[in-house]
Length: 305
Image (cartoon, rainbow, N blue to C red; front, side, top):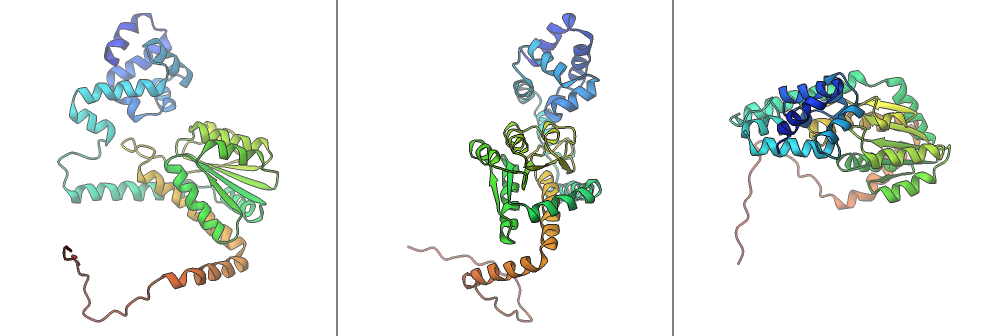
């Protein structure tokens, strides 16, 4: 049975709160793909718990399985509807490369500008001071957010912050349990609902660490376990959490944190940056002086036998 047929079959026996969800789905079949469980609940005027019960009533164990069912139905149906659900209404299959790049640029710039307006500079400054003086910093992130965690760790480590990033939950939980009141822990999750990241940050909080959530959802479970939440721009509906406009929002916040920590430790930072630059200088080829008429050239290697 398709999702719509399941909804129609169960509709007569549904309580009023679930009927509201059904009405949203029958009007916009792709809504579960575009919306989080919280967003779908808000659109239907009900709660996330009711959405979960709704999924079970129509035969799915949870919202994730329900979304897979919706995606499968769309994939078997209208190809254009599948495109709109997964890629978005901002883009069209017949768009020229120039139109695609223009739309991407607008969305990515908007995400960065929105993040700059959203961020609470007082909170960010208090976090940067805590990082600059902490005994140890743990950074947690899964998937794409794990890449962001690694990036922040590499930058801060270079200027003298004792930091480690964790993408694997067992190691992360072990490290989190060893934190103290002189430690700082950061959880990065665009949605704020990644279980592993929530678990690691919660464990660090229980151990006494000062905890920070970096997420676009200020009411998310990750934000609930953090002492401070730093907001990033939510991507438009066409974007999934791993798309690059979300990453640019996160990088904007991470860059800001890095620079403010560097300011807090200016003298030591300058010394460490110079020392680390000197250490790798021998592995960089010298730049050839540019000549007046130099132009970029495409070099094609000749085939070898």
